[in-house]
Image 1 (cartoon, rainbow, N blue to C red):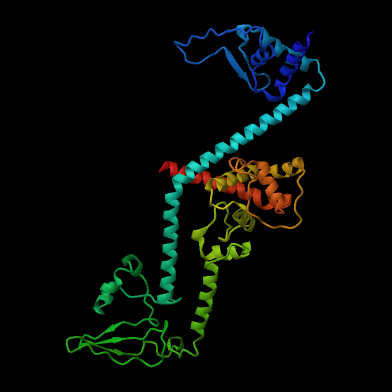
Image 2 (image 1 turned 180 degrees about the horizontal axis):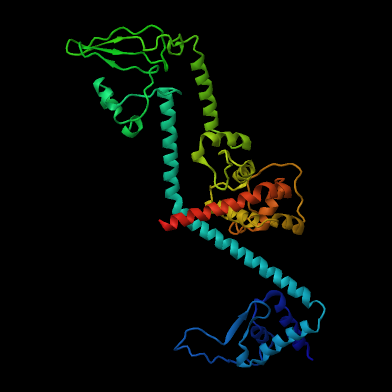
Length: 419
């Protein structure tokens, strides 16, 4: 056998490793200057614009001629690979394993890229809806805080619109209170007392003990002979000490209110570095800001393990700027890794990862601009291991949260698609 023929056989054997070059093209290069490769195409391009004379065998052979065409080069190449494996030629099984690992890696990368594109498309469609929900939550929170600021923590239960109209307050309160809210409430005889005198033009009012700054009643206000005069009268329960105004120096109720308001302000603005326990307290008050993937207990509190995993992602995911797609790629890879229980443990063992003894959550940074386009499960596993996330932490916290996160997103997309 000539040296040129031996070189051609060695090149054909390399197709078991790469599967990216055509056997006939190899023959063409190896026989350069002799005779061109035969044209075996008999495809009818008038009825069909696609060729059927070539096929792609991704499992083993790569690009070869269709077996029915009788290409001696491709048939000889296929037979050579088949007989070598049947005879157990040394090294061929190792080549098959290497090829299969490469196929698995390509499949996983394609799967992650497909999920990333689906998530990106759906998240873009939901951006406006999310903005509206955030604005609504903020408006509700501001309304609640302003209501407590004006009325105090123990808000008085007002009378009906008719009684407000008699006192000349109907127009001022009509934009704030709803009939369905006011009607049917029991009147608090010790909190607010409305009385109207039918025999004179004097309207009696009662001081409200929800923030009075002085124990001395204000002087009557005169607005002319055409209007009624206001004068203070005692409440119906003068012996109730809870309704006796105190000076600003000794009001424990107001002091407690200020302290509780201070705590509430702290709970309403937790910092990013605060521990999950602080966020747990925050969610007890601000349930409208519930994070995705965090389950609720029977008492309404957040499941702490889910909250720990959620805060992990908040610390470790890339920033939105300058590339929002980088964060989307990272989240998609995190879900792909941790929704399969035990996958993180397998990758730590397979890749020989050393888990950092110090738990420090750092933002993910890709090695290069090219690697930012496709973030693999291996990249996420390396990042979590470098941040000190042990296998036990992943099994107890991250895996269950990731499954719940993915399920919640799928349900959200389903609801959006049904609208």
